[in-house]
Length: 500
Image (tube, rainbow, N blue to C red; front, side, top):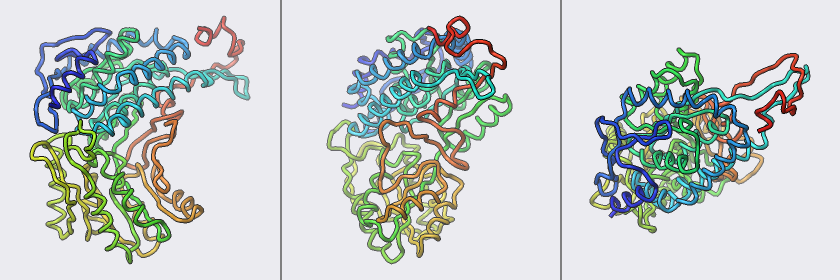
């Protein structure tokens, strides 16, 4: 059933079979093909090319060729096209949500928000920002300072929240005046190709948006080694991020890297304890736990720990596992058999080292890459499962004796992407939030506020740079100083970019 609906969505979204989108044209290269598998029924949805070096080089060349004209277009004109892209995303909500659910396994009730509504809102915020940003100004020395596109962009996106991650890179790059070569994950490539179709239909110039498919070691590496890009934006693993950062460093090119986390949630003694624990479980297990900012380390007062573990198990047991396209489903499968085995490996090693596993009582379908949600206790802070990103429905619960100790332990991580604090007292919540070493701190269950403009990114090994809002736009801009400029920033004779 899911495969039929996925293929119907692909037809509705205008995605050609076994094709990539380069320089405004759909190409069907004679290269090996990659099977895209529905993680629920384990059937093949379709095929995409392993693009390889030749296609990668042509895509980057197309972006380089299109850059001068696109970057010279007035910001308002670029904003108009990006605004139309947001509207186009919303116009295909049903098809895009179904396609995302069939590729990832995310329940469709979540895909509508996380894979359509949120990325459309992100896209719209950048169109608005482009219209209001001061692209030129005079500083106190009388120098004209202009903001310019940084250059062609290589965007490499992950499989867990693909549409959102694509638009968090594509929208700011486009309004900045950059051209883009996008490589989505080979596990979830069709949503990227659907976005390519939307840009083609809207009328983005050829070469401004290019989408090539393939694996990281083959096509991703070919793109990385291709000549011409000036900015790389990557979301994925720490190991791959180190390699991408090294290549960018050798070129003296910009790199924005979002590399995951091991996020803590600290529940203070005066917090609504049961509410905090149940909410943390729900946040941790979004998309079957395949979420980079999931709060996977839960710190609770030691005297309450045993009772609160039962609360956590009860909350985990409330999930309904099943077909992601069923409106009643709240827990879908993991994205692949390999990812499920990776999660099971973490749990097996933890149990062998003395951890106690508390599996939820959830009935799992007999088919699909499902994993039982699990609460883990009786582990030390230096245990693998308490320090490494599991990326599955696994939550570790740890007890603490005082708040200072809890914060010290929460901050003891190579990562620093996200953190959470629950407190009954607003002043204490604010004070604790400022002591957590993370790029994003959520207070008392706050989810992503609207509009989605708050910067997202991490401290330490969680990466470099930020996405969303003005901070996200800055990653794609260069500042130029024109000393002794005789024209005012509003003079159309010498500042044609502003006049168009």
